[in-house]
Length: 62
Image 1 (cartoon, rainbow, N blue to C red):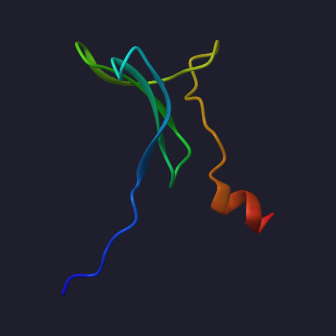
Image 2: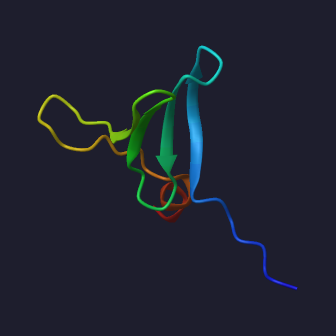
């Protein structure tokens, strides 16, 4: 039997029955905006850099 893999992406925010979501890559911490009608894009800050949330696993290592 194949080994069960952990999920790499998690939904951290959802609005309007899932039409707008913020999805986090739990390995890199990069946040993405997903909408039901336009796809997926990386979220950036005011300087154009990706918004990164430190994954919980890396917080524990500190």
